[in-house]
Image 1 (cartoon, rainbow, N blue to C red):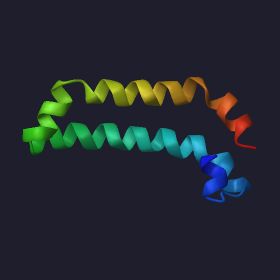
Image 2 (cartoon, rainbow, N blue to C red):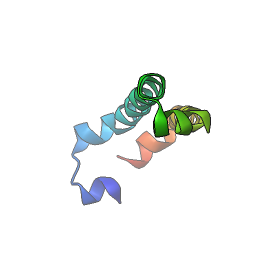
Image 3 (cartoon, rainbow, N blue to C red):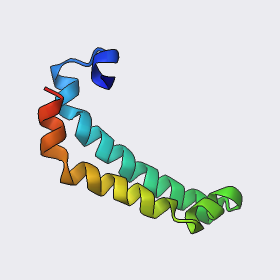
Length: 73
């Protein structure tokens, strides 16, 4: 439904999961840097495990990539 709503074409659909994995990776590094350098709420979220949740999301995407890629065709 998501890809249909946004009218993603074949090339965009075939790269969708890869882009999602890259996004999770960037988010993890960004959250860690914000926690270390900005502190406050960033540090609290990091200490509460947001980094682990991001890595679990990334791992799920990688584990299910073939299934997701097929569904996006």
